Length: 278
Image 1 (cartoon, helix red, strand yellow):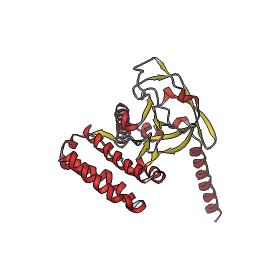
Image 2: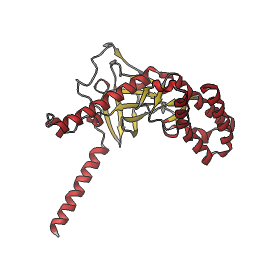
Image 3: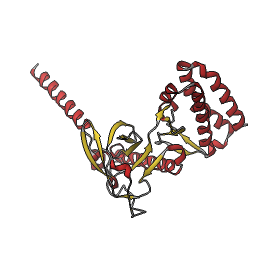
Image 4: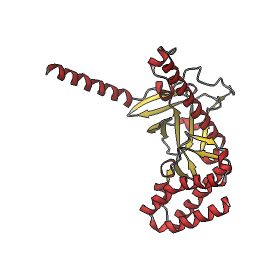
């Protein structure tokens, strides 16, 4: 009985310790070893007044930690080293076949995220990216971030980061606009999808109600973790299938929350399918 009690207390202590460690943000989660970072293609120091403010934690995804600027106009995203760093046991026993497999998967994941992020940065119009160091730029700023009340200074040259315009998610945008502007959002959403297809760009993680928003009247895809070129989008049937896949979540949302817009959605969808895929 006593042994069980001690085991329970020990287990609880480990859980509390783990929780506290993860609650307190550490740069070890976003700092990359030098061999991972690009040698500075452009060694000139860059700077921006955007960094003259603090950024507060708002979210994390499978690829990035996300912090919002104090003026609410931008978010800074730090690539997660903790997600691409092989576990310690794999690094210690790196000659074993299973360890090699884990290390290779982590490396592939990093390369895919970098490739996707750089592609998004090159297509700035669609993704609202303002600044980034994905091309090796050297920044002379540190940035202050806040998580759970703890302030941390981040050296931008030890991590991969990008800054995007802060967007209003689609459901929030719809709920705050009148009928005419709601129709305009639908129209611009279809336009954004077609624009991506014309560039042969597809986002595997695109869930329009969770990963797409509105900023300064334009549609912005803010989740950029799995963007890639797809020659398959040259095929009309594949384009139509992908179009339906990307737009159907919006129709489902409208059916539940704003049914008066469903007819307009259907008419616009038919128009875009006819004009863009025939």
